[in-house]
Length: 150
Image 1 (spheres, rainbow, N blue to C red):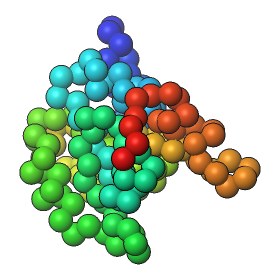
Image 2 (cartoon, rainbow, N blue to C red; image 1 turned 90 degrees about the vertical axis):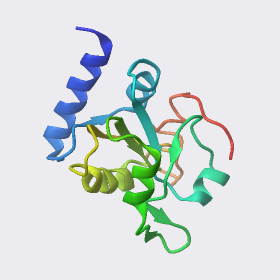
Image 3 (cartoon, rainbow, N blue to C red; image 1 turned 45 degrees about the vertical axis):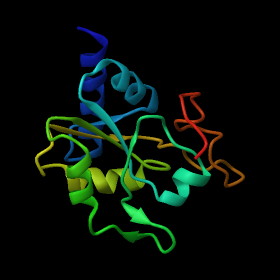
């Protein structure tokens, strides 16, 4: 079995263990690998525009806000914006700061016509450490994956 299929099977197992309705839960390194090796895989960053600008972003990610800063109100146009920017046959990998908002979004996106929907666990910055700071325990940036300052 090739690495892509191994990753997809492991992600499916994680999602099932979590009781998630979407196809899988990916680790950041797995999402990066799929971006490079799975045709049609699209990373969708669902963080706020403020986060993209001030915290950084993944090159070639599609940015569609799930919640908008300030106030973190739901983006009522999220699905329409996503559908306008990502092909329905795409493997959609949703990422936020820590994996929580992207889980919310993945639960909504699942069943709306996309071929496959995945949540990226740990997110861009990861979980808070003992000092309530992100970026030290896990997440896209902690794993040394490509990103640029906004």
